[in-house]
Image (cartoon, rainbow, N blue to C red):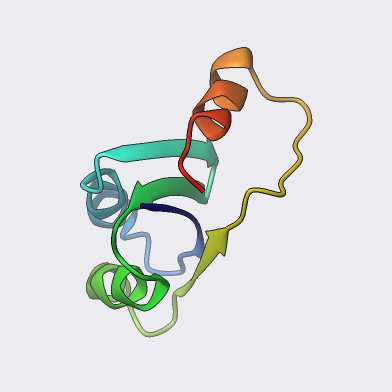
Length: 88
């Protein structure tokens, strides 16, 4: 399993279908308005290929594998715990 950051900028407003697709990974954290973290066995490319089905040509999306060396500020205890409990 690995943790991935998914961030998007949608011009098409297809938020609901994209969000449902992200949540279908099961283990997810909605970090901010257009940024999510998911834990999955899929690769970066597999995640992107899947999520491309839910966006239009003028939308933007990026998927980045997150490594153990991360830092954050301003989040709740539960949000920090979500990241701390992931398998990197």
